[in-house]
Length: 341
Ligand code: TYM
Image (cartoon, rainbow, N blue to C red; front, side, top):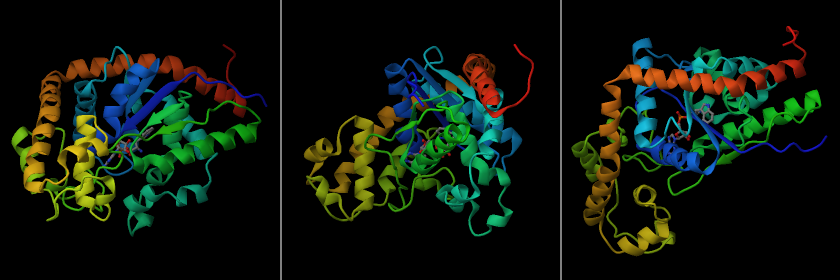
């Protein structure tokens, strides 16, 4: 088998299952924005089909999908440079997802920590879709032959599975058709933690609103949540080593570094020796300066939902120019009969 060279193409997705958090922004969207200028083609997706693996109120799902699109655009993703879509408007995702349901093995899915976390104790009551979730995610990526996928740290296992599915498909059918996608997990904030508990991931599903910063929070709320964020009584260290066993301090420093586009070392060189009473207002000012323009722009975009819908419809047409031929070729490889074109 000869090694095929795949043209660099970026794909990533976010679930419209609630508001956007600072974790989504720093772990994913901020990187999407830089990557759209680094690679010729980038596709960013609101994964509405993934969202319904757990119950979503239909009206809220529509609202959240448009708000997520607004969040992407307000953060700097340009519909002129990137293809912006919601997953359900590009049917090839679900079609390839079915093929991958037949490639992936039960045992692989049973090892997925996100399934275990989300299904909780009563996994028998979880939807079949939640179990098969990673096969659809592999299809999202591979239906574009995407080579690079920027994500936060929590998606690493799903991306390993995507490579396993690609490898098994290629092996079973004796082809070199799907690429080995590279995860892009980079920067100071690949795992933003809860503001109330440095051992838990910041998440839109945490019952405590104080645990996260929402991208729709206003300046006062952002400042208040940072002021109240859990910290400790010691002064900040001047070197990274000093953050060991101080999860809350490390989290706040990582957030600062990511928002200021600095390394953790650079931040500590500036703030080492300061108490949280001094550092938290600095962090709050930075967060407000970076996030308020985004939430303002999101609100402006949300006042014209029809324009958002037009952008997503155009994105779907562009996307299908890539996905339709890849799906057809997949069907040929698998042996599905269809009319000759
Ligand atoms: P989702 O919707 O949970 O999160 C979207 C992106 O945000 C990142 N993220 C975080 N990063 C740092 N710190 C946090 N606290 C934090 N919380 C969330 C996630 O790592 C992710 O990059 N399965 C995916 C959605 C998906 C997808 C895809 C992603 C479906 N198909 C194809 C990439 C490619 C998910 O649930 O992300």
